[in-house]
Image (cartoon, rainbow, N blue to C red; front, side, top):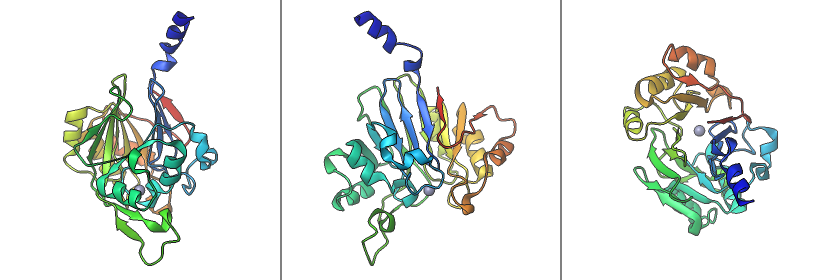
Length: 264
Ligand SMILES: [Zn+2]
């Protein structure tokens, strides 16, 4: 029986990492050992989130939540998901501590840190590196606490991205919302991402041409999944434009639909 269990746990499927795109910048990543990481929970008001995920319970168990910055389109479901799941939350220092002070996060489960830091809240097999992003951050009370009158934005610290190193060595870089910046080359040098989740929508972030430059010249991942496009009319650029801008760069573009999961 024990042997069977070992064989089953060591089977081909169990060795894979699953990456589920939930639309916009929201992802659910399931590690080879079944640890579940959600990035930027924005589902109920996310026009591109699949209908079933408007009910946060559809995410199943969640062990860890990573937050790139405080804008509503990245955190509007953070308080509810954190409470419901009991997951640890990795978040920038000011935003994390402000959300704890507002009663939206549990301080004992909040890992408020900063760029350059690495944590392993799921055990030594999974490392989470907080890396720079070139954007802004603030906590939007109109989404997080609509009953608050008189002030809309409070200090949300700095925007960040993440590199997640999983048990099998697979490395995923989520850029967060960002313009292209030269130090993406350092992120590439330090962490050598296998898969990059890259914003391409323009207006608030890189557009397809700038994202193509970032991926081809600086990040240099093996595979790239475009995100943060098509959610609103103002970010209506497309993966086709991104592919065209990448030209013949030896990087595989994974053009998935929200709700689709890929295994690596
Ligand atoms: Zn955004």
